[in-house]
Each structure stands twice: as C-alpha cells, then as structure tokens.
Image 1 (cartoon, one colour):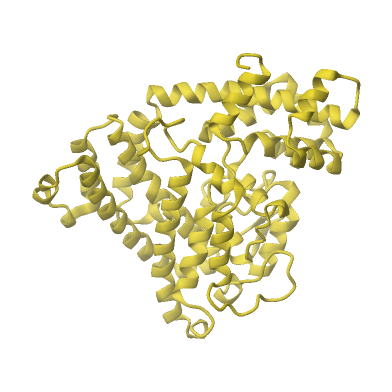
Image 2 (cartoon, one colour; image 1 turned 90 degrees about the horizontal axis):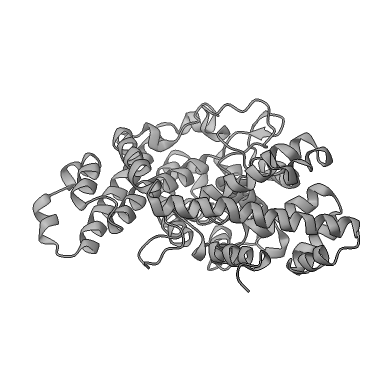
Length: 440
C-alpha cells in the first residue's frame, strides 16, 4: 500500500478528483456531512453503556462519538506529521491536518450503525433470526452469504450501509470510508481468523459488497481472499481512539454513578499517568468533576503518545500488510488497560441497571422485528390482511419504497433492519408498547 492512494479525496461514484479546496478539504467536508446527518443526530438517544440515562453527565453514543473523533484527530495529526517527513513526495499535496481530518471523520461515524440498547441490541436482532421460528423461516429465501449476516447483525456493517445510502446524501471520500472500515471483509468470508484484528468481525453487507470493492480498488487495498481485504492503515488509529475513549471514559462514568470510588479509579489510572500523577495536586482540587476531568485528560494524553509510537514504529509492516493488531494491545500501557477492562466488566458493564435495560432490549427489538417483517412480507405478497396492512403503513415511506423497489426477501429484511436498528432507545421502547397495546 502507498499513502498517495490511501489518501484519495475522490468520492464514491465519482470518476474525477475533487476540485481544489479553498476553505475546507474534502476530508473536512466529510466530517461536516456526517455531523449534520440524521443518523448521527439520533446517536443522542442511543445507549453507550448506561441505557436511557437520567443524568446529563453520563455518555450517550453521541458524546462518545464526538470524543472519539477528537482523540482520533489528535492521533491522525501526530502520525501525519511524521509520515510527511518520511515521505517527502506527500508534502506538497497533503498536510498533517488531512491525516487528522480523515481519522476524525471516520471516528465520528464509527458507531453510526449501532442499534438501540448497544451491543445487547446487536445480539437481540441476531437472536431473532438465529433461533426464533418467526425468523428462521426466512433462511430458505436468501443466499448463504446473506443469511450469514442476517443471523449476526453487525453495527459496523450497518454503519457502512448508512454512509453509502444516497438518501442521506453523504457520498464520503474513499479515504474516509477506508479508515472507517475496521473489518474489511464480508460476513461469510470463510477464512476469517479472529486472532487478526481486522477479521474479528465483518464490515459490510452483501448489499454494499460492490461499493466496498470500489473503495478498496480506489485505495489499492490488497485483497487477502475473496470478499476480504487488508485494513486501511488509518483504521488502526480510528480503532485506537475508540479503545482509548471507552477505556477511560466508561471508567469515569462508573465513578460518577457510584459504581466505583475515586480512589479506585485513581489506582487504576496510576500506571498510565506515572510521573504525571501528583496526589497533592489532585487533592487540591475541590469538585469531583474537576478531579475526574484532570485524570481523564492526563490519561488520554499518555495513551495518544503511546499509540502514536506503536503506529509509527510499525508503519512499514502496516503498509505491507504484516501488521494486524490493536495499537492499544501493543502499547506500554497494555496491562493497565487490561486491568481497567476487567474491573469495567465486573463493576460497570454488569451493573444491575445496565442488565435490566439490556434484558428489556432482548424483548423489545425481536418484538419489533417480528411485527415489521410480517408487514414487509405482506407488502411482497399482498395477501388480504387489515392488521398487516396497518402495520406496513406504520413503516416510514422510505422503508416501504425500499421494500417495493427491492421486491426480494433479502431486500425486505435489510429494509426492516434499517428501520428497527435506526430507532433510538426511547422510540423503540415507545413503539413496542404501542403496537402491543401496552401504551396508547
């Protein structure tokens, strides 16, 4: 791989390079297009860790995405500055701000495809088709590749679908789409090796496979097998920004909610802060917000430095496809991050209020899918049914149009999953109550 191709500012479907930017680069335009998009706005009411938060200081997917984007911009600029020094031919065409803008835009969108109720929502949507009679009956109606993704809903692939849905008008650059796709393989890729970071999950549905092939071709990403490619190098920075933020900020939220104490949090961060941590200065601060903010800023700064070093030390291996690991797993603070992860799972991610709402998600989302796939099937067959006709009319016009246009079982299932996964937490809960006669 070479940086000239990897930094392509061309947009999907375009046959020519964009005109020279006067005030905003093509990558900065990507950022703006994402932040003003409807799917991004809905992240305001989607679960990060603590579902349906009553406190304004607990993170949602929206605030998490903004923070990941901020860290991603710093990582991109830090790496870009050195890359430009190492590759003199890039200096006239690109700046360190281009690297920062690409990573910031991709990181901003990294969770845009997540369904309601977080990762529990992904599992709930998958479980409906994997084990429930209402979902299993669709298996003979789709291909093996299509079924592989239907029974394993993946927010990353849903995000790629949303970014390339022309109804949202995004048309992002190849560079941003490449950096966004952490898992550049299809669901049915037979050689997936979960020890390789880029093959841990999958990154696009069958419906967008040709679009990703176009992206990979434009960026000159080497194929590793049919329906699978090597990662765009900047995807490692997007992943690192996400890993840094959820490690530190989920811990912060846990402390705010009383799930662990400030001394416990401080002890967990001490191996990362090292000499930057001075207890006397922390004790001199009065409020919890101020103390947490100081610890967070110092820890994130240390982790940005460490991940930048790992990336730059492995640049040659990354470009040659010989590197496929998370930067945080190889940085000097790996053991400290592992300890944070373990305590977060035990004390934060399994807190009773989190488990209660996740359990509700396992009822709400399969219930919505069951109702609307029957309505979608009615649209394909038009068998007389007042109930199903009414249910179909509850779908947004664009979803009904997609079902009628595709006119296949797979197209219908994708359209219904677009609708249900695109709901906010509160909207999903309210709609479930209404269509089941619980609340009118």
